[in-house]
Image (tube, rainbow, N blue to C red):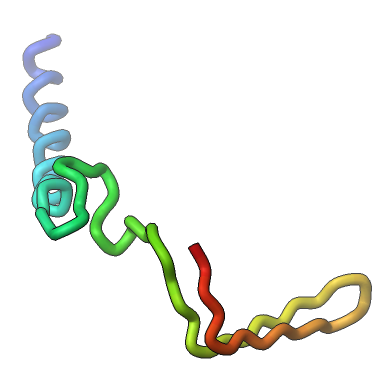
Length: 73
């Protein structure tokens, strides 16, 4: 009983994990050797926002914020 259940579970596990592995081992100039996150999801360092706009509703008031040439670390 256990061996008949183990084979399909191993197959499902393999089909889910194998496609995720190539993004873990990509090597760029500042990339870590192994990472669980993809390159797109590893946002770190210093960023410069050339322009942006944020609006939010709070306490029955709509507030907005504009960003121009801001630097974030």
